[in-house]
View 1 (spheres, rainbow, N blue to C red):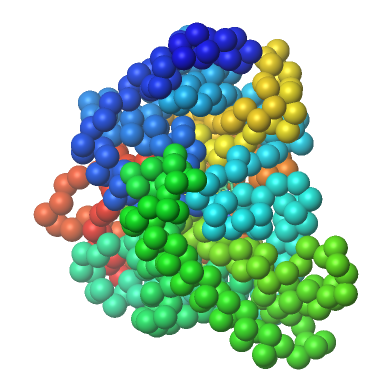
View 2 (tube, helix red, strand yellow):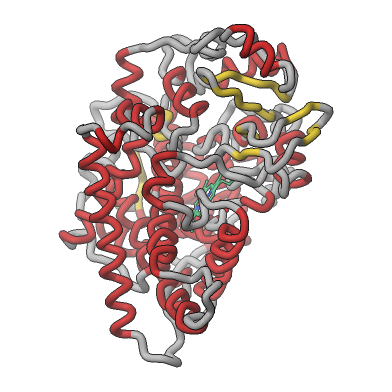
Length: 513
Ligand code: HEM
């Protein structure tokens, strides 16, 4: 096996020598630490948990103690020093190429966009989604579904009841929810997830749910479970032994029942839309748009519009759009508590520019350069998707002088671009000045790529940006956030590394201003 690894490795970019079975886990400072394992299992996991082997190992290495923040960056930085910006890591018995630094990441995602465009099939999501949807599909179907998704998001951004208006409404519900706590300590995680979940409900179903609606709460809870599963030890066993697992008892059986519940919730919504829909009425949400396309192409045997595909696309919008955005907001409140001077400065700007009862619009970001810079900086620094989502090469490829065989998993390390010292003055420090010029004007930065780039760039980027801006500004205008009196810790100094990195659960007080 050792010789086999050596032989296969010869064709790939350089990297540390892999050991049989373990590959390069030792290089990643891997050790099985009971604490880490249980934290990983408990971790809230977002859309990209899947079975990305690298993420699993990175997760396990992330809780090593004694080196301060951003543990997993450290071994990757060491590897970069030894092997350069592009190297191979053996994650167990599977090789993966890591591409580091903004320039190489950009070339990989943009110049080679049509080459590194495939997603690796994943047993867990393959079983649930089959060949449908956007995030895990490839080829013609991916293009077709992505085009439909983008067109729908664009259309929903227009008109009187557009997405911005819906988010403004949702922000008001969130403010009421926080205000009801009257400054007592609370964990903001669930209210944030429910609000962001309701924005996706507005996009796909055309309506929101009361946050005490039992059906909605059950949906969010079951959904949370199915999303978390791939990050658990059992989830990893499932992916490793996927052909055997259907024959064996275990928690995965329960999980697939949960998936069925999620899908039947969505099926019910589709049915309601079908019953209610009057031909010729303007479509109001993603399901309406899709049903119209299905009706238009019903006599075309080659049409890719079908109900199963619709169901998966709807589920994927929750999968990709809830955890990512709500976790970013969770970090946002954590940074405001940890950096009270930044919080005060944001509030001063909001007070100076906006009337107290003025409805905040996304356009207002242009009048609020400091606040806008803070939102960008916290996205950069929180770096929630870490190394990014795996791609594979569509063909044998020469990339920056290295041979990448067809089908090799590859990570364009987004995090390495977000902390590239060539592009950021103080890459390892939370510093809103990264996005301000000397006169305090907001400046964009090309290395700011939290949504990735190229053909597979995040489809919900615009929606997420509007959500982050409106939720953040509304919350900061209304409340001052601080730790409960008896607590002294820093919220943002540590994190749980799931598929998105989360702060450890925390309690804060939202005191009305
Ligand atoms: C702060 C929030 C968000 C962040 C940081 C984020 C980040 C990302 C990243 C890094 C990718 C992978 C792109 C690649 O493969 O290179 C991605 C893909 C995707 N995102 Fe987001 N995302 C966010 C919110 C959303 C929202 C709100 C939606 C809802 C519509 C969404 C929908 C998607 C979809 C459908 C994909 C798959 C695209 C494809 O494979 O073609 N995301 N996102």
